[in-house]
Image (cartoon, rainbow, N blue to C red; front, side, top):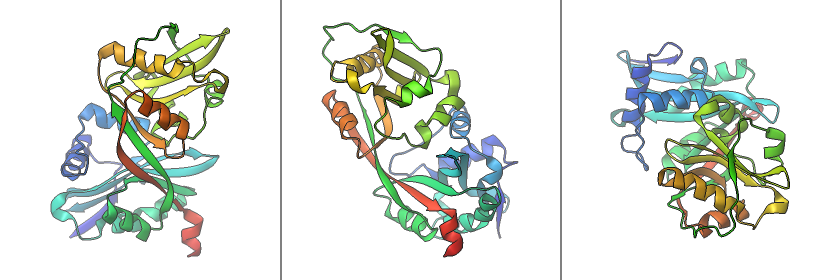
Length: 286
């Protein structure tokens, strides 16, 4: 008999085991360590009391992890991971978990729900559409070893001890997705390194990245200082630190300048995703 519960009291090792089993045959195989799962729970603002689990004979066989934060001043939920172990698929468990947890999200004041899904995962897209989600934007993931010629003009790069969000966001052309947003970087804190370039006695370029795997959460250059090699210098610095492949997830597909730059230094797209959105009020009216 199936039981649906929130995940507030689930032991971390049980969640980790089910997470890894659920993603063992995914399009891009995903296996987390205990430490990586703990980082994800923190960075994605996951609230286990508003996350759903489905149990069979007390065994966790499926889950939906929800992060909770403000987006544009409204309370939002982010599906930070949905999984069902391979042997239990085909029973509409994702839809049933949504039916179980949506009243709790509404009671908590959530106005919008977000998630990301790979373009080729047609079955999952249909499942999310049946739960009231629609495609909001396309996101592109990049990785590779930068093919950068040594910069003739040296740009001194310094560690940034504080996150000056007013300054940083003034450099943006597009909004980062949930995993790379301001709240996520605040949650991660010193788990990310932030570096910057100063010219004319002011910050004109920055990057924030995880030094353990060289995943860049954010980078941007002030509009008046672009095409001067500053972005290239940041990537060169990050790569030279440990000679490890660089990756970025969820670049907005409309960010043509960012995409052109990443391709120009030798990074390649490896996954396209849809960011999907569900308006809670719309579901109530339907």
